[in-house]
Length: 366
Image (tube, rainbow, N blue to C red; front, side, top):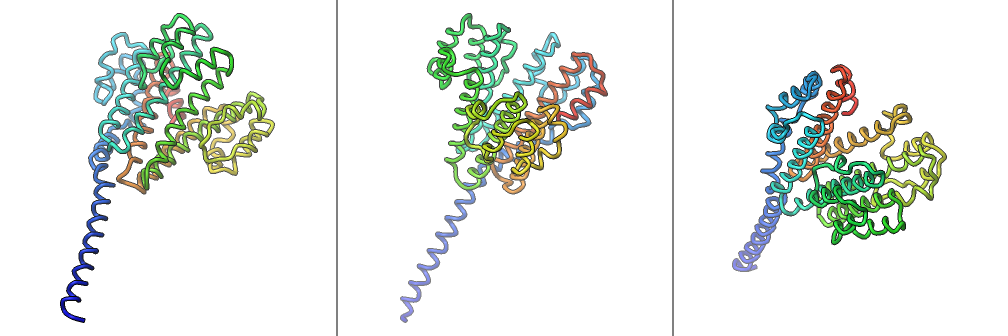
């Protein structure tokens, strides 16, 4: 073979190799670099999360004034600055604004290819607020007391709470995804529980569709997160229904599609105890076994256990995919837990519960 031909082959081979290396390098940079800054910032924020010792110290506050003062060296300081009367309601609203600020921060600092997911997560608070307001209106309770100050449509929610009639709420919801289900509720075509389920079904469908539109690590992480949340919702729905002696046909309309576990066999058992036994063979068997005896007395124990399981799973994914969206999801779950515990402590202080009992209650709510 002539020297020129050999040289040409070598040059072509080197060009292909360098092109491949360049492509792979560019892929790695595109995939991981956008997470470097937000993940570093989130890790710094994780270091500021309150420790169990700090929760115990807050439990010793005895007054809501002391409770607020004790949080002045934390990231809650600016949100609590608006608290003047030191009521539980004021403190809860300040803590809710802090949680909303965390979601908004994720939207700001995360790569554009995933930050819309966190806007969608905020819509779950819209669903909670809308259903809470309508439930309150139906039993003639002050709806504004049930509004949580988080979500993408808070002004509309507050307007709903102030509405004089149920028909006025329909006008407020006009043009939103929730208009049609609410209209069906007003016409008596669906029950209040079915209305609530439909709103959650729409919400989780959006989340799942978004997750499935992603690729590689991002799809794996987001899909796992959404399906875990759906499983949690469905498990609690079925168990509450069984505790209320509801039949399979009554429960089916309340199930949200997209979960990982098959519920057919569970729907047809006679009671709560048998439903728990059926769940033992699913991926959640170990979670349920750890709290089985308590769950039969109090289903909120299982809700906390499932929340803990989702946090642990996101922590696992964070270790497996260190530069990914898993880090931000893990932090959001930890922040939600922290805010729940702070709200619980404030409420128990206001109720005059002794510090040792508060520590016990809040420890159980971990």
